[in-house]
Length: 519
Ligand code: KIV
Ligand code: ZN
Image (cartoon, rainbow, N blue to C red):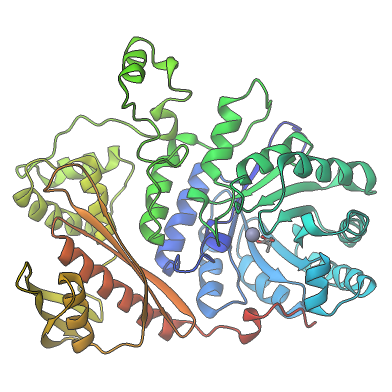
């Protein structure tokens, strides 16, 4: 890379983000998100961990085949089997990358039973192996921040000598501070022979809420690749949020004279889609993409913004693709208006999707006086639940609730066969979930049940997310409806459908659950 001010954006929503318990996406969802990332100008898309399961392998291969601009990377541990499997998946891309890693801190060396010299040998062998398959090899020192500085210099030098073209310095447990993050990159650039010939990457987790600051500090010291996810999705407190680092670089050009290749007007759409397909809603006050990020409630702020928008706004809603559309939607609106409106909101719907959303839009418009933009977006959330192809389908629900007790009567199709149940419960949602279980007994454990109102008003739609766990698999189902109880049942049934699809499709490599580096 000749332009020293250019910062590469490496998106790992589909790998580190999807690793977040419950954020599992289907094959088609992963492909859709990857294509949106590709169009947005992400330089490298980490599409998955090919050895982890057949599903991961297929998703990475499909993304590699379909990608137009981005480099497509797959993750692999430091062993030949992982690396070969990764290559088999990414090799279809116009620009493939193998990303291989090993934990270098004393804690990780302890659990992998590799001494310092043995680990150096392992790094040399695996990076060389990867480099013999692929020209573009990224090597990561997992838990780099807690690795002894001298040893970190030695492992990085070893990986560079073996042919790695990108060196990633992860803060795997979100432990570092901005000053330390920049010091480490500066030290590596100064001390490691060959450091000026590779790209240094920063990969920060957000356990102390500093992932964005730490990533930017690393860039100020010379790192030129930021690893991040949309909405900061990721294990525990998540990863560096793509939208935050990209907008920080754009807004504070005065202090950070860098550029990215990101079309920022596509950020909002991606944020919404990732929230929908992962089942992880974005918190209202989330930087850049939260619902309140551009709202001015207090009198002083409103007054200031009306007089001069720059008083309280450091970026414009339009910069991230948040546009006000002027088509009002109601029960008389037709298909063409819906298509245009959805396009304005950033959603390009295929004909069959449009038909599906249109039917649900009409039903909603019959019940609700005004259909807001957020209502339309929520209709897409609902498309993940209860489609005609699903194994379990909700056909009909009646609920009695109030001071005299709660009871649910439910009719569902189970693999095309009609079944009904009537159950009492501790509240209407409990009664409904019991009715689902009476029809379709399951050992799946309910991990999260959450409800959000899409808009204001008592006729607002509710989006409901239900996260279930069974045999080590975690899935999330989401649905939206003005009837919160019905949305809850659809979300629950959607999650059960996902569990079933996952148990049929995935054959996890037993090794992946442990950190195994067997060659
Ligand atoms: O956080 C981490 O260390 C990782 C590596 C696999 C790069 O995600
Ligand atoms: Zn990570």
